[in-house]
Length: 201
Image 1 (tube, rainbow, N blue to C red):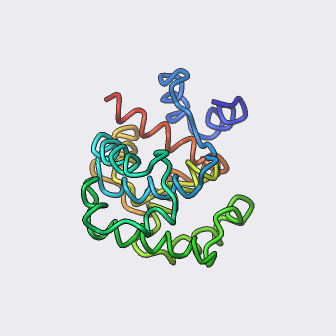
Image 2: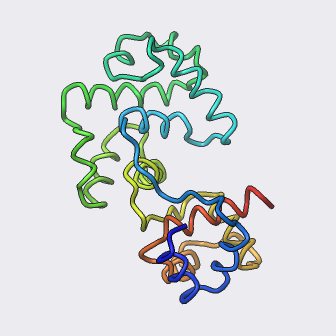
């Protein structure tokens, strides 16, 4: 984890800082992806699934393509039945098709998202069927590399926060905002710490 991030957490949240120290170097933090289309497809595939299930379906989905690289043209050429063989639900197929159509017609230009403001990215992505706040937040964190994103609707983050801060119940939005406010401008790193502590419980 970058030194400025560690210094910020040490100063503003000793509880989180202590958790960071127990993670050693296992927390990766935000990062960027070269293939934004494939990354967004993977985000859609992984919606409401465990990590293990999402990875299994993603591998089957990639195997449908000759180069194992999803493309908009490729998705639009498949029938629903072919896409279903990867384990995709009809709802996710509709989402992938809508994404592909927008990319193919250039009504959604993914390269513009790299330098666009966060709010604009959210609006652009959430026009795609099946993409809501959670998917947008995951994409901002792990495709565009934004450092100050937190996903209050993520169950894993709420569980991690409950455990780390010894809360009686899963935190609601007001509690999440109060606890996470001091983490700015590095909330993505904090989210990764919470996921890590939960995975290693």
